[in-house]
Image (cartoon, rainbow, N blue to C red; front, side):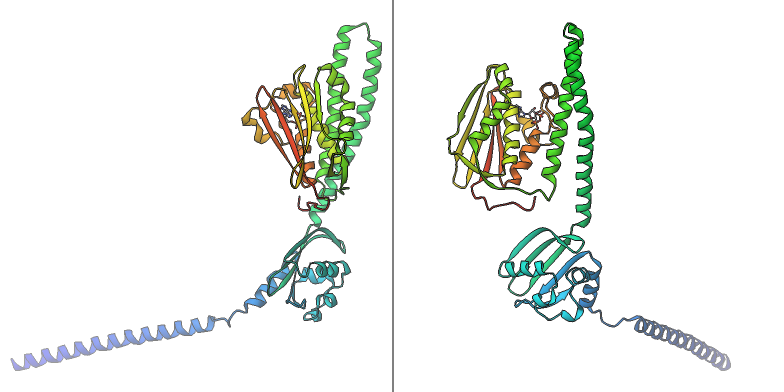
Length: 388
Ligand code: ADP
């Protein structure tokens, strides 16, 4: 019995030994694995990131120029595009902007804006690029941004050339068609049926002529290098000239005119643009008026602006259409506009041209009663909007 007990004890002791050695082995393995992982993670660790270097490298890749200056005008940072465009050398960092920047015009621009908080110059040509130059300043730093507009400018030139060429190409055959139709009209005086068709063809030719004119005007207004000649323009003679050209239509429709403009009334505008604005408004006031209707053109001096108002007693415009009438090719009643030779571009020209002059256009209308279009132009001739 004792022997059996002894053998059992020895067996248990041996089992304990086996379990202990297996557990020890497992622990050793786990510790080894942990050490391995720790070593691996230490191997993968990078030195701390230099964020300013990374930012400088990223800024060198963009095609916009940046020059940062301290409050005294010393250059403290430039990116690659700015260095290339302004001829700044790496060793110029730390120098004053007038020493570092080699473009004389840009130096004078910074000089001019140095004490201002924000200034923008459109389309400055530097070397072969067209850039928008922005100067911004706060208490600590002054920043010059150069936004590359070269691709946009190229596209715009292409568009302008295309419209100019296409309109020229269309104008010549149209003129020939006009003359041929006039000759045909002469020849078919006795044939009323033929005259009807000739008159229809003449209407379409006139429409195409107007469409070409409007497209040329719109593309001119949209081009960023449109040069405005802002000056004091006398309003009454301009209105009289426009009315003279539409006198036939006015008498055909028996429209009564009321002009409430003082002899000496003047507005600050570019005469050609103002002519285009008023011509379109007066044309519409006639086109969309009833026979025997009225047109009133008035002038008013406000505090900071001058107002020219063209009112008619015509068909008016339904309220739901009012937000869209300044959009291109938008017509309230397509057939009425077509019949009167409308292209759907007149009011877009009015809006764009008024905005180019720094002003705005407003409309009030009542369906069946008539419409009033008012243009407001700033009094001061030196306010030119550059960001249109
Ligand atoms: P359109 O060449 O067709 O006259 P506009 O751009 O000048 O084009 O005008 C857009 C539309 O606005 C016109 O088709 C017309 O329906 C409406 N409209 C413009 N002016 C007047 C007005 N004085 N009275 C009524 N409707 C007008």
